[in-house]
Image (spheres, rainbow, N blue to C red):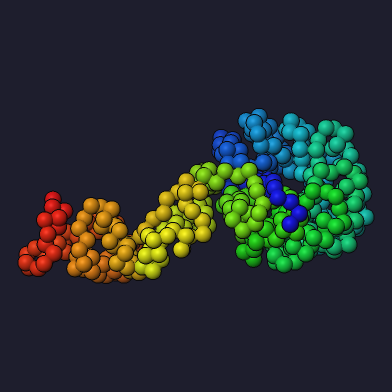
Length: 393
């Protein structure tokens, strides 16, 4: 482990908005930026000035509203993109240049020497005009490690503040990611950032691997928005760093659900119920074995406390529920829970859920209890206690 503190840079307003079909209004961008800041994000990538005057104005306006987080814009490694960035009034820019031979062939005439000369030309041009420069290595994950080292040397000599290693097509695995970053840390004094895409579902794992290999910056998007399968998700990366490493961030976990809801509404992308950390159902339990354990000790089946995120645990009644769950639910409603009553209510719960393919609501549970206790009273069976009769009224 190279560092104890990891800096979070969020690209929801840039890479996240590049998700096909997503377009944020200025009001939404400001609201999202402020919510990111409240959540403790250190740096916010706001947009792409080269898109034109409207985007430049929006970037500038968002930047004016931030008081703690640093606003940064994104561009290509060209003088014209630097000029556009200057018009935003921001003082930090990420300049992207291709690293892999695939990208270099398409964008730089197949010449690695043009990549290095572009770094030598454009970075000082931006620095001389008062900008802090982050160099983004597009498609770094498919680049030659030898060329990466050469490009990093050029960047370091030119004066960039850090290097963003982009797994642009999401092709890395965690084992190779860690090995790469251990190598890069030996080759450069630059701060290293990892920007991972989720094409193989490994963006969060790769981000943690990069950190364990020496990266000190983690690039994320809320809900994992982004091109194709998206980017590493802010809520997953921050929580995983907290839970499974000894790294610290400035993230305030209790603000993550609110932030996710805001981005979901603005992007018109519903949050899957089982989405880690912020999904509606991720702190819900139905299985009888699980619920019985949780009622005795929440740590039996929860590695994360819902309270960390300002959330509450939900014990759901359904096909897989057991006696403990029914007893707990009846007790919470002030209803009787004698042995015979519990067994019959449980049977009704299971039959109902299996038929309707959903959980039982509180009102439905009340109705089941009423049906069971009414039948008990009418049949004169034991268990028709004063408490049972009182619960019917």
